[in-house]
Image (cartoon, rainbow, N blue to C red; front, side):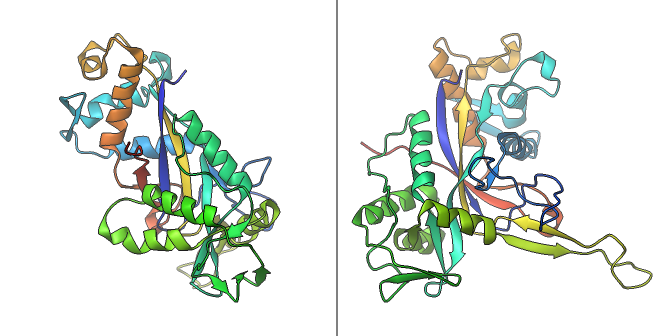
Length: 317
């Protein structure tokens, strides 16, 4: 059982295809979705694999400080993410499925709005509780729009070709301001996005949200051109589904004490008498070594799946 956990936000910079295999529906290669809600997600195994790959790409001599000790990042991959041979023992890091938090939809005003729904926000609150995070702001539980939002037209929100008459919500305003300070990194280059997030989050009814995340994903047609004829090769026309840029997902990184006490060489960095402290050392290793930009999903060679990572910081007391 995990001892400590932290939320990690994933901000999609380029369209993300976390595929679920081929399908007989309208899209040949759809994205992964929750079975019971049909909301997009990224499987925990995929999340873990992408994070592990990011750590393995560090140079062999790259060092970080963990538990006040210098260590090479790659020396601890086996202990934290697990050995290549699973029979040697489990890793000390686990990951939940990456769930959808905010989904971008074209808006008549303000370019686009981030949409969410009461179901998603309740799940977000529950997941933060698992990580020991107590929200200092109440989570809105009804549809609404922020007073003075950039995406409103005559007190209405027009998304794609649909018009929504939503009440103003000061609670959503307070929550959006809280969220904007935690989802995005603190650099000045994110000032524009923080301000937009404070203004342009819209809570839709659950059913309307489900329709948008099913019908407003990006679907791209791919072809293969024959070098001999200059035309599409037979059977080489297919469609792929992507989560659009600016989508915001989150996952929980879960840490346990190390599972391989026989590895004394590398244990010394993470080892602690208290199991919770040892798990905290594992989490410190992950947080310190996590790159700010990683690649997730398919089609890396055509620039897809570039994702910015940000570990949620604790509120200052």
